[in-house]
Each structure stands twice: as structure tokens, then as C-alpha cells.
Amino acid sequence: MNEVLLDVTDLRVRFAGAADDTLKGVSFAVKRGEITALVGESGSGKTLLCRSLLGLPPSNAQVSGSFPRNIPQSIILQNPMTSLDPAMPVGKQILEASSDKRKTIVTELLTLVGIPEPELYAREYPMHLSGGMRQRAAIAIALATRPQVLFADEPTTSLDADSAEGIMQLFVDIKSKLGTAIVLVTHDLQLVRRYSSRILILEKGSIVESGSPQDIFENPKEAYTKRLIYYSTFTEHSHAKTPRPGAKRLVSAGKLSKNYSSAGRVKPVLRNISFDIYEGETLGLYGRSGAGKSTLLRQLSRIEKPGGGTVEYSDELNERQSVQLIFQDSLSAMNPRMRIREILGEPMFIKTKKRPERNVLLQLLDRVELPAAYLERYPRELSGGERQRVAIARAISTSPKLILADEPVSSLDVAVRTKIVHLLRKLKDEENLTLMLVSHDIPLLQHVCDRILHLGEINFVDITL
Image (cartoon, rainbow, N blue to C red; front, side):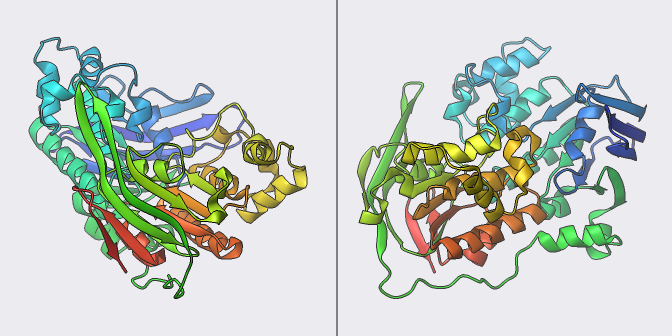
């Protein structure tokens, strides 16, 4: 198990026209059956490092250095919904990636990654699977190539705590059974602490610190490492305040239900959900992947009609634009062909039938602490945190009364996540907004919410004060 499978020496990447390297002489080694965690803020070079080692660097990048180029390698991408083919059943995608064309290989791999009833799920399309199940399917596809080194790029960011633990336990099983070396890219330092063999801290294209989890967490040497650890947890006490007595009820949901049909089966997603949202509060919602949280938000925002039950709105929410939704994946929620000024201006044009003046758009950017020059950029030219700020600016552009935020920070690193949460709280107070915040991060919800709803496996909603 001490065999070195991935030996990287002085890896450098420079983009055409750039004066300096983006990756600056990175060196490390990964052994068989070992989980090596790669940790750093957004833009530190984590994904670029993985893509370069896989032989998939951007077309305008020059790669140099010593690393193995002929060992079997594979990658698990961050968002399984966009990495899986939506028009192809899961089993067919696994078979397409596998060199082993035995009829049983699909069910064997699905069983290996912990998917029950593999014959049934092999016929399902990605849209019919929960987030955790989609991630397991993506892992099965990656394993179909029989890799010796498996790169996992943020594989748990969109998952609830239980599902994330399940994926990490799966990685432990894979490395033990198959001897696979795993390079784990993540910003979840608590998972890193429990599951990794070695941690590499990447800052601005350089490894500034490395060591065992015990070394990194108990005796960090670099200020950058200390800051990452500090940002990884919220303070124990909440800054949230209880809604004032007699607060007005904005939304009343009564016995909401929703079923979906798939492969000839009817799957209940929501069952008899009832709750109220009060003016001025921050209401938290958590639950496991597949519990129906996003489905519930789509019904509250009028994107979907309830299969059963009712949603009643106060007079303030009569206009469609009075309720706005912030999606989890800001990149896929924006038109890649539109500049930021068009993305921000579109909701206002729909509401007023007039194009907003430039100074109005500049004020929106200023509200979310982005520079004026970003108006002319495209979404792909922004970091994840910057895109999420644009998504927030778009949500407040129509002066809504209620904002529904669906996992708005799950894909962001710990430092950016904290800043975005504080920005949401600031805007909520300044704009007199009501906020419903969906998150898998219970400490985050405890930190900012007045009440927390738990959407359980049987869809009973508990109210936690």
C-alpha cells in the first residue's frame, strides 16, 4: 500500500499572454489506497491542477513538469446533474464508459457504489435520481474505467450531511477494496479531517503547507491555513432574532403534496406539508437529499403547481416578482450568452417593460459589493462567489418581499460562504426582506435563522426555535 501511484514534480501551468504561472511549481506524491485532500479557496488552482494531471488543461494553457501520463485515471465532477447525460439512462452511461462489456458489469458497479435495486436504477434517467444517488452513479461511471488514481472534484458540496458521509464512506471502501488512490478536492474541512490521509493546502497556485490531518488542524503553521480552519465553522451563538410578536403572515402552506412518475412508478415527494412564513423572519429549511426541499421552493415560487393542498399569499405577494428564487448552481442559472448587465436587467424589463438605466444596474452591483466593470462580463468570467453575488443582485432587482434561497452557498469555499451569508443578512435588514434559506449546513442555519423547519423522510415538518 506504500506504492506511489502519482508522483508530481514542479508542475507549472501558464496561460497564453500571462506574465506569471498560475500553478507555480507544485510537487507532491499520492500512494495506493490513500485519500489525499486538496484544500484552498476558490481560484487557488485546485481544479486546474486536477485537469492538468488528467491531460485536460484549458486550450490556452501551457503545462510543464514531471508527472505520470500513462496510468489509468478518472475524475468525478462537482455537479453530477451537469456531468451526466440527461437523455441517456444511467446504466447505458456506465456501459459506455466501461471496457468490460459483460451484461452484469452495470449492476456490479451500481452495487459497489451502494445503489439499491441496481437493475431498476440502471434504467432510470439522471433527473429521476436524488442528488446523492446521482453522485453515486457518477462514481460508478468513473470506476468503469478501472482507474488507479481517482480525482474527486468537490463531490459532496450539493449533498446533505448524511449523504456526504455516505459518499466519503464509499471512497474509503473503494480505496480499501480496489487499492485506488483518491485525490479529494473539497472545502469541507470537517470531512477532510476525518477521512483524508494527507492534506495539501493550495494558495494562489502554490502548496503552502502539507501534512497529516493532525498536523494541519492541531498545529497549522501558515496564516492562510489558520484562516481556512477559522472560516470552516460558524460561531456557536446565533445572531438571529425571534420575529416580533404579531408579525404578519406572508405565506400559508396547507397540506402540500407532490408526486412524480418515473419508469411506471409513482414516487411521493411531498406529503401533507403545512407551515407559515412570517414577515421579516429568516426561516431555515433542511433535510436529506431527495426529501423534497427544492420541490417545495418551486411550489412556493409558483414555478410548479402543488399536486395537492394550497399555498395562500398575503396581498404584498400578489405580484409574481414579489417572490424571488436564488438557485444553488449560479452558473447553470444564468444564460452563458448574456452579459451581467443583461442578466440583471432582464427581471426589471419583465416587470416594467422598460430597460433599466445603467446607473440602476451599477447600484445593484454596488449593493452586492462588485465593481462596475463586471457589468460587461459573462458569467463564465466570474468566480463562484462573484456569480452568487450577481444571483443575489438579480433576486433583489425587482424589490421583492420574499426571497427563497436554495442552497446558495453549498458550492462555495468556506471563506466565500461566510461572506455571502453575511451579505444576505445585511441585504435582508436593509431591504426589509423575508428570507427562506435552504441548507444542509445545520450550524449555518442555527447561526442566522429565527426558526428552522426539518423536512424528514416521511415529510413531517418539525419547527425548531
